[in-house]
Image (tube, rainbow, N blue to C red; front, side, top):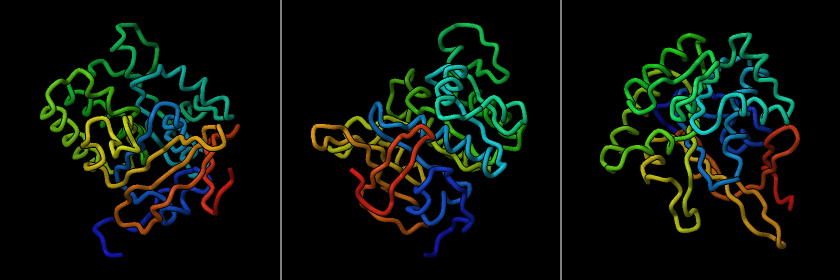
Length: 249
């Protein structure tokens, strides 16, 4: 397949997932991870950052705009992931974007002081990325950046600027957003996130035998041949595991 992307792949750190996308995310691309509440988006992207440090020695920045950094560390600790260990080694940086919104002081090393001004937001993230020479970046989540914006045109402009800056940073980025109505075709909150992203991965919950089961669909991944079918996945005690070979439920 001919494309303008580098052929180098960035491993996701998620067992079974890279089999679906040609060995990993295309390097220096921006990929949207979308799904409704409870589908596992934050765990998916945190695993990408943590395993990047643990298994591949690749520095990563995790920008949390919905949960406090200490809550992220605690929640991910249930999978045996010691985020703080790699923070001390300079392989992971967690950027606290919640405290300033809540108006509470933060003891974190990296704190977003201005989440309203998108230019200030992007400049700060750029500095953190360069400070640890990051190869991976996560922003969790897009609606938390744009929630103060009312005008659709303004939101579109902000997201286009975000995408441009991310590409210039030279990192492989995962963004999260909400999918209000996946069955109805609405897979992002603002309807533009999937168009500015080079890839789109939809996490979904479906009822089967009176239970909710988790499924994953690669909606788009430029420069990559991939299936358009849904694959089962689970959140185990070691994190997200995808089953590319077939049905498990």
